[in-house]
Length: 105
Image 1 (cartoon, rainbow, N blue to C red):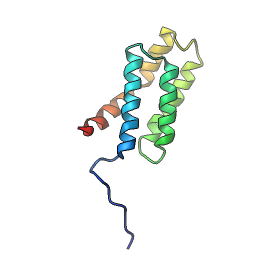
Image 2: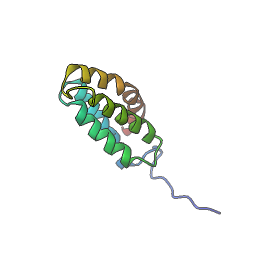
Image 3: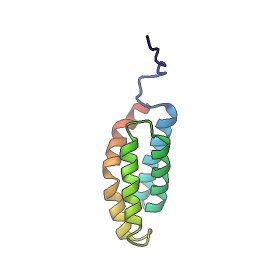
């Protein structure tokens, strides 16, 4: 019989993972509010994807950060065109984070 480590809660992610996801959503909000650039968001999403490699969020975080990296290389990171493309590229991730993060309360 294999014993599994019991989860502390019913959440699918650890408290540390939830904090990382919260930070990722905050970075998307700052991009939307024009308080951060696509480079800032890329950096956070890249690091978050690495830290969450053992979760189901890894693929979405990684693909979104890869898309942001591609977009950043197309023009000045602070340009409106890059920002608009970055907002489009992060929309699916924003939706997924909105599904996951209400479980914090």
